[in-house]
Image 1 (cartoon, helix red, strand yellow):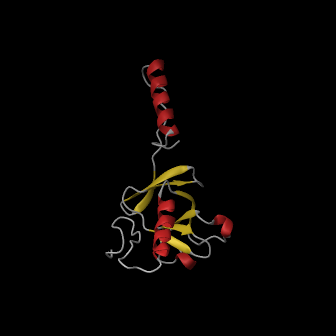
Image 2 (cartoon, rainbow, N blue to C red):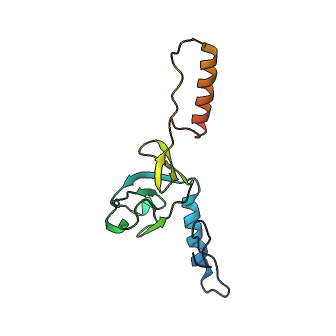
Image 3 (cartoon, rainbow, N blue to C red):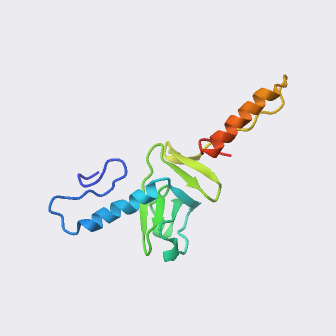
Length: 149
């Protein structure tokens, strides 16, 4: 990390007497925009063909990535129109992966899917009211995104 970057996400900082501060400021805003409530389309090994209509969309870069993504495995790739920005994940970073319909969390140097929790069923004793309460809790936790469906 240089003294002109933030510690966690390496966002650019302004320097004293820096010319064209708007470039540095805008770059930081582009990265922040991608990092807040990050949604990725899919996990791919090669970059897709895109246009300006796709600006702002993100993908998870597969570990075996090639092409413009070579050497960027496991990063979040952000399309900015004509080029890519790569966001290094940090411990606990959470993204929503649209292709799988699940949340993924960066943990121990890899993207892990948030585990699903099954509704209670069967058992030696039938306690319908307890099951209904547990199902209601699980539905709520799923609706706010704390657990996957």
